[in-house]
Image (tube, one colour):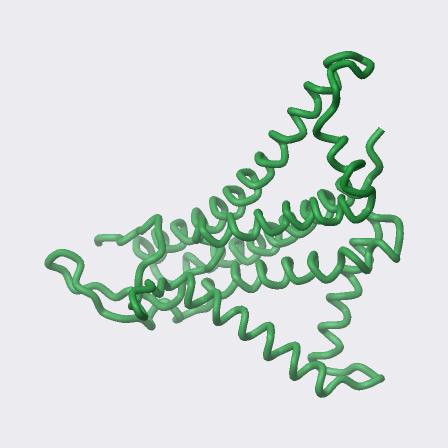
Length: 251
């Protein structure tokens, strides 16, 4: 059996020359789910939580406790929490939406060469390097903003630019250059870690579904649910750690 594996997202259609890929489409779907879910939850919020509100509050309280364990300061946690929680919820939904059974059967038929193939609407947004790079850039830039707000522009830039005449003479300058390189390295490590894990998981599932009976891939799907959770948690927690490090006074 032929297996069609594409490293880049497939184009479903185009609007005014702008290509609509299946990962872009699912990014819009996940974003709308979060926005609509938040709106409905806010409209129906009660003092005594029940049902879906109860589940959401349990998850958010667990996340806030996790943020507190890193910052050790509730006031600082409240500053970081909206971004960290949003990243976690968006990434975990992005990772899991591609695992929904049967979703791969919906798509548009296109001619690839001489073959008529089905291009699925569903592909995890995290399996698109463009999205993971965007998330990584947002996290790293937000860390710079938090750092400047915490210690001031001059104090924050002093972390990267150190005069070679300042003790211990030259070493501080070298360390500052390494700090600049590490900020760019964060973007690369962030984006490729999430993209690599999610894309590899999708390829594994596609291969298993193509080669073995339908029930055999179930353990692998459960594994991907766990991997999707871990990757979302790691991305959110690393973002939090970078926020915390950026706000520490430089000596």
